[in-house]
Amino acid sequence: MTAEEPPILEQGVLSMPNEAWERLRRQAEAIEPLVARTAVTHDAADAAGELLGLSRRQVYVLIDRYRQGSGLLTDLAPGRSTGGRGVGRLPESAETVIRETIRKAYLKKQKPSLAAVHRDIVRECSARGLPAPARNTVSRRVERLHPLMVARSREGAEGARPLQAAGGTVPEISGPLGQVQVDHTVMDVMIVDERDRSLIGRPYLTVAIDVFSRCLVGMVVTLEPPSAVSVGLCLAHTCSDKRPSLERLGVQADWPMSGKPQQLYVDNAAEFKSEALKRGCEQHGIRLTFRPHGRPHYGGVVERVIGTAMTMVHELPGTTFSNPVQRGSYDAEKMAALTLRELEKWLTLAVARYHGGIHSGLHQTPAMRWAEGVAGTAIPRVVTNPTAFLIDFLPVIRRTLTRTGFVIDHVHYFSNTLKPWIARRGQLGKFIIRRDPRDISRIWVLEPAGGAYVEVPYRTLSRPAVTLWEHRQAMERLRRNGRAQVDEQDLFRMIGQMRDIALTAQKNTRKTRRENERRGHLKVPAAAAVPEPPGMLPGADDSAVAVPFEDIEEW
Figure 1: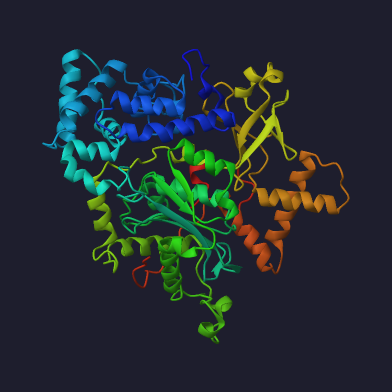
Figure 2 (figure 1 turned 180 degrees about the horizontal axis):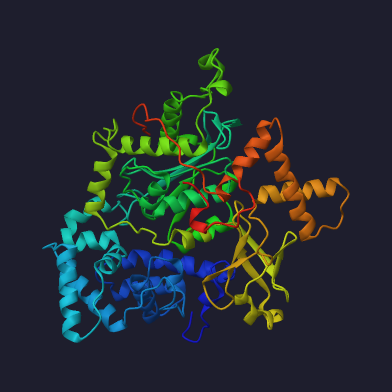
């Protein structure tokens, strides 16, 4: 990498060439241990430079970029943007005051509080006539610091020893979010639809658990089989503040466990090996690690929690139990009573109770373990814009821009924001596009000259919001009817006919009811009562236009 090298970040995360991406990844691996040190010697910088083929000065530049960045792999890229949507806009002089005050005041064995450091920063900025940062801005700068460097500065060598392994590097699990395990299961309970309480079948549960504290940090309940979207939804729930989702569910509970995992530990299923998940994790500084083949016990923490959760579910009406012997003569289909939303509310309340119960392996509550861990390390990096975060994990499509916008699976998308690109579309090649299978009424297009996504809706705004599964069913039916050529009008006419059949049928089949419920997120479901959890959980109006992205999924 040289000073004359063009900014590779302009190409976007997914459109970045593999060679450039791998270079950033190698640089991060070599630079991260140096970032944790209070002072980087010339010998250490020279060793890293020899490994990367860089000069000593370039190594120090990378270290400075990484320390001042926001915890992303692309912080190391040359030409990194210093402003824009979602990026801090403080002048560099104010940022210098923040960095210097944190170094001189916060990173001391006297261990002053964050509030005291913030007051010092405000006082210094006011004296220099600079805009003073908010306290959460200072908090974010502190949480970006390497935990080992913070421990050495504030606790001394002995205090930092628990954070070090024999080789001098940070071990995999040293505090909250050091390792988060994610897994799926089909739930042992039948649910009914919102409309007339008819049976629709068993839902799927995706959970994320923090190994250090045994707290559940993310959860999503869907009617779709496990997929890359399920993983992305669970990660977005894990990394963001839970309060908005609790309010949408109407649940009064405390669920403070949120933040970006340092390591995401998963099995070898296909949904965990998508390009979007791999690069999304790398972009956000999350190490994606897979269990060794043939050793399922390596994911025992999350599997024990799922197993205990299914035991709890057996106390709900409509449970299928784990096997026919347990079920006996119990008629699960006849006794089913909970909707998907009610089941989700029940699980949320059960999670809150679990966090307050004594964990046999910890000998304390998971909530207490979490609080102690957060107090002893850096504050977890919480995602402030779950929508933008989730987009980084949605399935990827590549398409060429036409004079009328984009065409994806016979559906046209257009927005005035595309006009500046249409005139030079021949020079831009294929665009990176993200699409949410749960609502294809809009797509997100990566700008050709920057890292931001632009929302582009249907070209015909009167079209109803539909799911990708409805779209595929309509395409299959049109082809069975002998339609070799399909246009958009035929496609949406068939979707409308299929919806009419599902809504007006005298006797819906379970499959039809399930399809109706799968697109239930395209309307606002009515609030419903939910039974109290029996114990602690360890371990259509279908013609409506698209709802805001944040409201698509009921967590």
